[in-house]
Image (tube, rainbow, N blue to C red):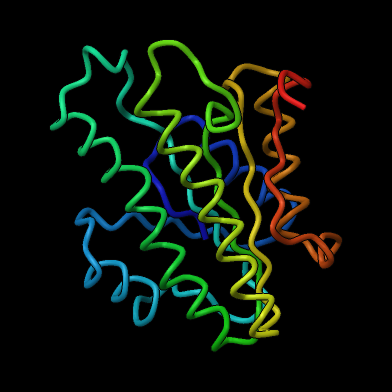
Length: 193
C-alpha cells in the first residue's frame, strides 16, 4: 500500500512493487486528521493485512531560506509531510501489529541527513521523519510484533537515483529484508556518509 500524493515517485514505486508482487493499492486521505487516517487504515477497504508493506511518501512541499519562509508556510509544510507521515505511521503500524506483521517504509528527501542552504523547512521535515521512523522501529521491536520500520532517503528523481530508490523500497518491503529495521537508507550516491 502506498500512502502519499500522486507524482513521479509514487507511480515509479507502485510500478516497481507491482513488478515484484501482484497487488498495489494507493491511499491518500485528503484530511490530515486522526479520524481520516484511522478510518482509512483500520476500516478502509485497502487496510494492511499480514505481511503487507505500507510505504508512506513524504515529499517536502515548502522550500526557501529561514528568513523568507513564513511561519504559515513552515506549518503547512510540516502538516503536509511530517504530520501526514506521523498519522500514517501511528495507524499503519498499529494495524500491522494486529494483522501479524509487515513492513512500514517511509520515503523522504535525503535533505534530512545534511543541511542545505534555502531548505530549512524541507530539511527539518525530512530529519524529523527519519528520526521518527527509527523511534517507531524501536517501539515495534520492543513489542516483538513482527513489524519492521525503515526509511529510504531519496536524493532526486532522475535516473539512476530513482531506479535505486525503487529497488531499495522493493527490497525493504520483501521477505529478504526480514532482519532490517530502524534503518535510514540514503540513496544519494554517497553524498553523506
